[in-house]
Length: 238
Length: 240
Image 1 (cartoon, rainbow over the protein chains, first blue to last red):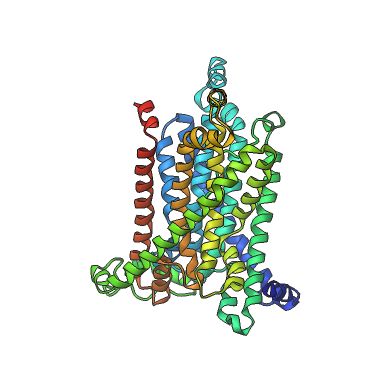
Image 2: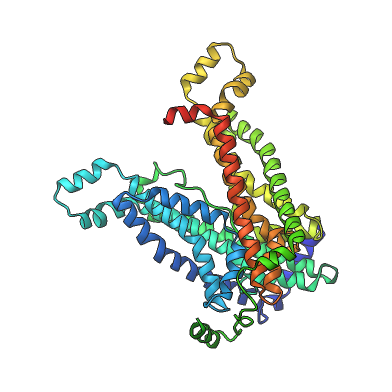
């Protein structure tokens, strides 16, 4: 556990936090990349999932997409996208992470709309609501817990995967780890590697905890008891 | 394309990649041919590490799931613990393990892969076990099966579809996760992807690694699906 001790020594040096490219810089960068990636994922995943769920079609295609992205290594997208017209810098990283944020958002939005009791939908139609009104007044409110669960899964995954951007020099907290490997184990880089690892892990757990609270807050009390299980399992982080 | 890349180069001062000229195609049979030995050895390493990780995870996950199934109060803690492990990013886990285990061995990658595969397998096995109908359990008990006999002869076979689903998910995601091992140069095909990127953005090497990685995942998935069909003929009959 020698390296853990070195890691805490690294954390105790204020310069490691405030230096240019230090912990605070990288943390901010990490959150910025993650935020854009989740937003992009939401813009693509939610309307598509809600539309498909509303029409009740495309369930098979969604499962196929989710399974395909599971087989796709994050590292491959992170290295391929900068070589396309997207260019270097943050845009390819954001797009690569968004690709992995879409499946949980999409499938949870779809499941959220499909799990609604058909009788509820029939009753809404019987009351004279149009298709759009059924969607906005009945289906969307009832699927809020699922949308929130999808957001939580996607956001945690993006924050976790964003660390990998460091392998292609894309910024974020992972950069601290790769810089530690750059220093080398024999020159005291081990402490920085461990410190970077702890920082990334803590951030992921923190985001998970915060979004779990958000999910609980937006779920109407009446729906809470039934939704103990998370609707769809998360894909592995990274 | 040239217009777009020039625009992005000016917006992001990190500059554009080495020229997209004919010298750097996305895929090249010549590269594959000239480096066949290296590609095959990386593929073997990748497949071997995946197989080891999934097998170890299965050996650990089955007893864990059975324990969680027999003693229900343990279900929550077991799932919660593996859930927390699952939330920890792969790069973080690897950077916490590598300095302790050794940055030149693939053991740390293997440990990380096993930990990630564990949750999927435990969760799916448990789901398979809990959906064994109560009547079936009663009938087995009535026929005089003990706890272990019932588990081996009745419950585990009936949970097989769930276990196999978990096994497929775990295998596919493990194949993708091995690439993260390239952080310490033990990423199999991931080393090719990252190596190509670092070697002046050699697209053919990146693309070959990525394609083989996805192909390996799909092939293993199909093989496991085939094995699953052979092992659980009753699910096929029910469907038709």
